[in-house]
Amino acid sequence: MSDNIIILMLTISTFLGALGLWALLWGLKSGQFNDQSKFLDTARFDSEEDYRDAVMMEQKKKDAIKRKKEKEKEKNYMPND
Image (cartoon, rainbow, N blue to C red; front, side):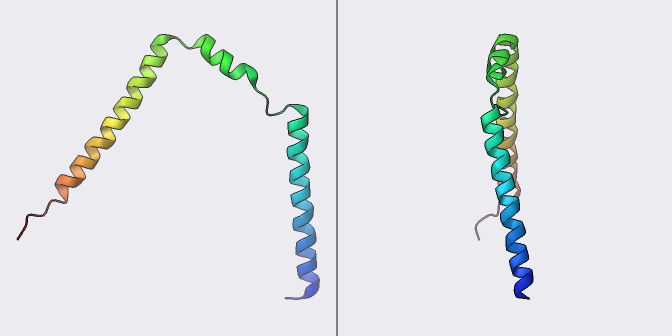
């Protein structure tokens, strides 16, 4: 590759990196990432029934994974010679 192309690529990548850093700092300074009401709304509007349903769904997912692993073990069973 030519030296000019390498210099051009380094210049463009440095510029894009600086632009990304500037955008991140701007977002932090202007409060774009602050969502303090998210957790309060979740606690305020979710009922105990919703929490129980979530726990039950998580338990079902774990049980399904466990059953799948057991089936794989049975499927791959090879008796000793």
